[in-house]
Image 1 (cartoon, helix red, strand yellow):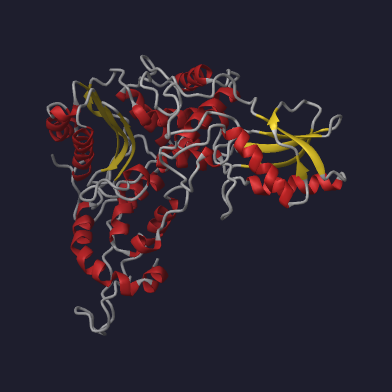
Image 2: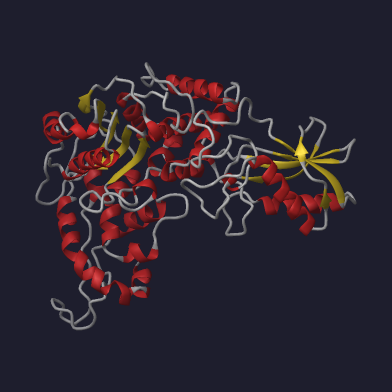
Length: 518
């Protein structure tokens, strides 16, 4: 970070001077406190959540971009290291800065020792007590119970992740339409069914008796046909490897087909044709997008599987193998695998799904959960598989209904208790495989669907999954309090009439938790 600061110093000088007062206030707000730990959680994650905003405010992060392409771990790792130092970053003040004997730059203020506070070590001067039920009720009551922007039906829960104690509840068992917060449940179910290291594999197979080459879809919506840096599985790489394998067999002209039979049932989501997702099929490239986008709504090709197969045929030709126009088929058990490409690990896919609210990935992971647990890989089977996995974890699934994996279906139902229960499981040190559910949550004002929200107050301190449909506004995630506690919260509002007013109220509620004041 110090090297990055030096590189961008001329551009950041004015920003650093403007940001210094805010950094100082944030340092004071983040002072640690000793705490009696009765059920410790994962402090590496907590420290990152509590300090990401403080680190970013210093300016270096804004220019250098501390997050990697699929999550937020780079910033958290760098911040944890920085906590062992006491400033020293050059904020571009130049020589002769006041307050230093030699005229060297004034050291940057360091964030409060959040890791120390959470670990239970007493900080000099003492600290404030953690929030109690009365405190949280006073903070949230006027917003969540009385604000008409939240419509006629609303529910909320706040849980202390250190103790597991509920600090606030409003109709916590009321099933409401969750919108995209459904993806938290999909993530937990997928990770418990397959594990964080599982990868989605796309392959090609050769039918020895007919000479047919089959492109077998592995249900990986991140498969890409684009040229670019390494990361997602590449259809171009698969074509290159397949062509090499065919040439070894002295085959330079083949019949090409494609196999999407990993999934069952209809490919059309209940909402119909929509720019928020492609047809749900086991074979697609770049989520069937017709533009160069990687997230958010976009026009989609009518038949993602056929489109991917045609692109694959073109890539084969570039490597000296001519393929027939592709058509649908099914690889037999006798077919020999020619080549494979695999997605990033499931942990990274979950983070991408949550950060970007990726509907295509959500539907894919719900279906893979069904495949892994022996259920039909269609909408109904995926919903049953997700419900079964959550029930096995002992979560409160009463009243919950999963009709898809993304939350686009308005007939989905979740409770506030279930959402905070999912987050509590993800924070449990006994379930490290669920940690991507927390690290994938968008960071207020900086990443994913929260990048344009929380410009003041809770930037970097709130990490939450958003949910928005017509008449539905939801928010569920974690928030770091001024005393260093980590809380899980779930806010659901149905029958809202002004989406922006409802969103603003939910954001103010999360900000109030972060600041400890109504």
